[in-house]
Image (cartoon, rainbow, N blue to C red; front, side):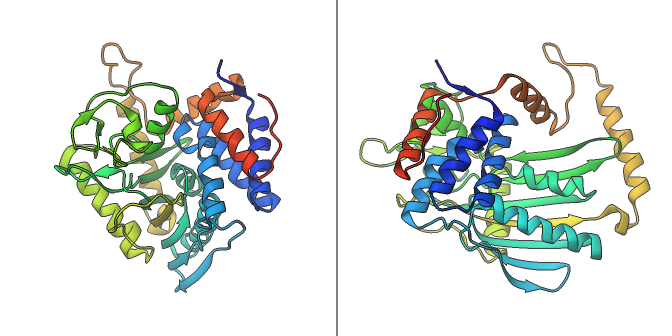
Length: 354
């Protein structure tokens, strides 16, 4: 039977492991909060299942506990920041807090963040912005083993390169569009592999470039040592957006792009270009709120398609998942839990039973 945890118990366990891996308590708790929030939101791919990789990255030296954000350039509405290979959950929040402050002051802020360890669920940063009444647009690249094939390519050439847009709505929860530019997140393939499941056709190619439904081709080395790859979403259109994320999130931020053979290192580095806009300072706040509300109402009056629950907005499935999992607990597959236990043992952290 798969173990099930309350959110507070899972947070406490993850924070304890991270402290034993070298994080100060405040950092460990913030990272644990972020990971568990991803699980609560239904995004297990970005949740506590990342802990084993984080522990390995710390032990290898690619992830630096307690690293602080470094300011490379500050002109007011332009910020260039270096994450110093620190936990992205911490570095990303620090970068967003700076950007939000400047956007309130100047009406807009462009934040170029490079050299951060895995930022996790980018929607969290959009939620920070919308809570402050700001629109945010995020382009992210991934420096790690390339797991996504170029359109009409036969092997992995870049990462899942997320794109995210957050838009506050008057008297309603925000619109938060957060997606990988691959057809499915790499972490979801890890979860499916751990659960012993196959996946839908059209998502993957194997190490020979042939279609496959086995998620293990992008999780564990295949015979001969190679890996398969995820496919970009939307054919050439999604591929084009993935390339834009690499060029903007990687090249423009100063963090770097991927253009080398893969290796076995566990560190996952991200660059993120964020644009923040204050509708108040833009002078369109009243019009923006009225028109956005009118359009959302227009959408919701569409009759449900047969066999569906009707129109939803980005962000609603996550909020529904949070309510359900806060009530019923967070279920982890047995393999993921055993990987977390093994990671705890590597750093000498005690483990509580589910």
